[in-house]
Image (tube, rainbow, N blue to C red; front, side):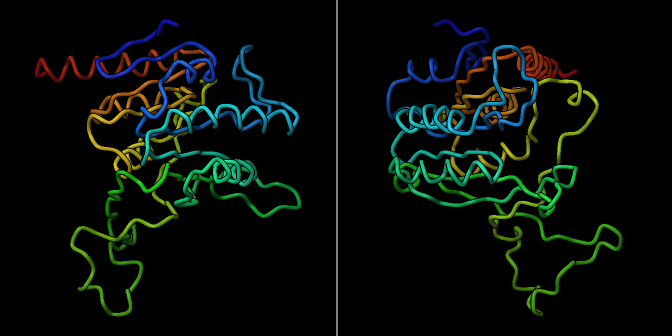
Amino acid sequence: MQPVLITRLGRVYHADCVEVLRTIPSGTVDLIFADPPFNLGKDYGSQVSDARPEVEYLAWCRAWIDECVRVLAPGGAFYLFHLPRWNIELGHHLSRAGMMFRHWIAVYLTLGFPIRHRLYPAHYSLLYYTKGRPARFEPPRVPVPVCRHCGGDVKDYGGHRNKLHPDGLSLSDVWTDIPPVRHRSTKTRRANELSEKLLERVLTVSTRPGDFVLDPFGGSGTTYAVAERMGRAWIGAEIGDIDPIRHRLAALQSYRDADMLGL
């Protein structure tokens, strides 16, 4: 199997993720970030089925998750970004596979439409598991939230504002500061796109420069671009259209070239 895209730190395969995972030696990946198709019937191209029966979809998910668990190194981190409805099932499978549950992170991103007879959905689920005790866990602090109108604190912190850490607040398991990617250029793509801030945070918490990152669902290449920029080696796969990834990495390389030339 030959990669279709190669950068200084990573490579992308235009192939089914399970086939790519089977080529990776066991216990060699430091972090996995997976954002699979949500099985909502979206059009990802002729190579991808996003409308499978529930039993078939879960069986497929278990197959690639098992390969991810195999290639993950001891102490490595596994982040699974999905709808809560599916992560309930997939988290159970990860636990049964011997992975250690760390957090169910609620990423505040409104879905944009109400669902009849349901509460309004306002978050995605980001499961965080590790293969045993985490080898790396360095959560960043976040800025103290302030009012966007007056600039004052939105909370009084029980009168102990002066005792807060000078670098900000401890990171919680509810992330309300991840902006959605909704500009015109991404709306016309078949691939969904996550905020780079989400991947920056995940890689900051669970990796260091030089670590090896895997994303089995390339999409628009967000994970790959962030890993490249942050100095992490990486590998990825995409069975559908790879042009969004190609353009993303080409733009990153152009930025580097211009920066090196002082332009």
